[in-house]
Length: 472
Image (cartoon, rainbow, N blue to C red; front, side, top):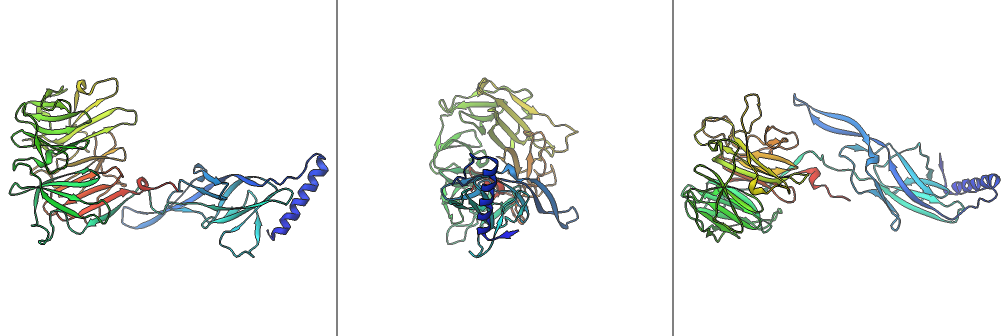
């Protein structure tokens, strides 16, 4: 029932009188403050697409009390720092208000000052689609406070990727007044000194470095000769902290701290092909296996332990990912195709260790292909591999010739079981309309949870919405 607030004051007097009748020692106080606000069960509507292509709304409900409301007693504001789920409806919501005082009333925060207040009851369904005021009056009627209650709701679906085309053309398809357009035959990208850096090799074996000045929309590309020899294997590029490493087709290893000036490591053996990097070691394929060298003694290559025949090691379209599990275990994977194989799928090798086991002594495990596993990683050209949202992600160009039917950038696959199976995922998908005319692609995920995909023609940036949600 609506009342002017002087009627609420009358109610305070009535409450006080009753208190005195029941307990002669009870004395009304001037205390008034809200100590807690808890939201009740809310409804949620989210649009989804049915298998037949029709859009429909899916309804559900959840306990909004799991999203705590923060009370600022100085500013007299109440709001949830962690926003409610996208699609939450706030037009009729039960709210529990805990307070010290005589009575609480509420009204629209944007209402005219003549608008009547409504006495709060725990059974009331409040419309919180807009902020409201909560008016609390002390028992003796001498003190009052007015709080502003606001409920925040995410304005994007958390488990969906929002993609932005950052550049109208790719870094190597620049207009003639800036540079001669290049059609890369290989590319690889890294984040270095806070910038996106892409190395590319063209059909004439020229290796170029493209650096984006900023990872925002305002970023501009600059181009420079990389300083690498013509036989540099661009797709062998690996990063260890702020240093880059790359191998050549004759087995030499070069390193750089800026992707422009490169120095050859002291050659200790020939036939090396860089395969992976962790915090302390570089890994390389050899003619008969896999070896490693430490950052403190580069050039001293030591043989790795394998649990299966070295002929199963990936050698073509090779990539790797190093990541740390929540329990502290370190994990290194090699993914790629075996040279000379006719299989349409890639192979996966893993090495796992923890604080009780030295990385140098951990054994490599081969994930052998099983005829019963229909979700093996495909053998793709220019395979891009990275960790994202505690999962592994792959994408790439077309299937390696004669070994599958994939077209360039036709799929993004995710593994939830550390590389055993690779499947499409509703929450992680490629941007609509992306093209890779010559099939050459590179991709990575940066520290801000953005996925970058670079082709000759386009540069895209995307992120799962919930990974970009900031607390209020």
